[in-house]
Length: 368
Image 1 (cartoon, rainbow, N blue to C red):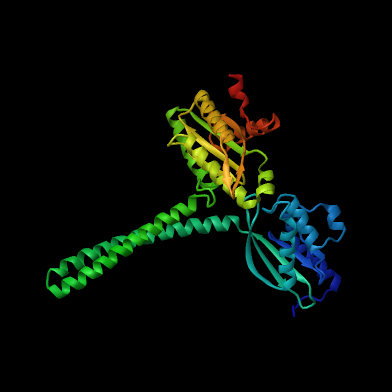
Image 2: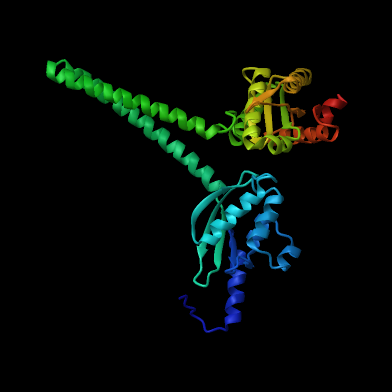
């Protein structure tokens, strides 16, 4: 039982607790035994983007979840939404849930937990751990890299020492050789592990292209190089037209196959030194180092036409897609890759508005 050190009325305590829960930086939802919302704190209202009129209706957990999903918060299609809601509601109704990570459409990662109350109600918490996950992954990679380098040096020195001892006697030589081979294998395995961790930290697991963080880091470096050398640099923003229709018609497996095939097509149409990354969902970007407006336009049109003319075979059926492309050229005033990305994104939306399956260049290029 909680103990309060100051003698106050129950109403005063409840108001104080509610005000305190509104100040925390993680979402809190209290549900009745029938899974209707009893209390939602400010942070959870922000996460779910719940309008005041919906709050006033005393919504159920399912209604809140459906509102968030239809608003694009969760990576679930309209077709899969009923099953998704049934599953999430069933998990909460079953009782307490250990901390579980949930990925959102905008790239954030939430730590979700459900606690069953003695009266049959539920306490739900949602904590944004996106920065902690990225920081932990970075720290782990650096620590493992340092440990591997130290271990490799130590193991190589030990192997050399054992090889010297092997010359003393045949029996010692045999044992030393065996140990040396084991050590060399461990060194190779650790180097392979270091390489694998580096790939996992920078690669999109579905398509094999650079993930968003790695693409932005590499793109920033390319932009700084272009500024220092007074060179050209172009950025293409690429979005699959009507991709939701692909998922609806061919399922998520068909959508995934389409994205993987698109990446293969894009790689075949760009140069070896160009950067290709997946920014999220069906949106991709390409950095073209040393490319002026004319060269970038030629490459972008080549990618658009190749995608339009291609067909993707999946489960005995053919899938056809088109892409819209926004093109931006770096300017001497650009200090951040996000500036270039923003102008390319604006051009991309213009291509969408003008009918899709087309290339749109930023207004500065058109004016020139």
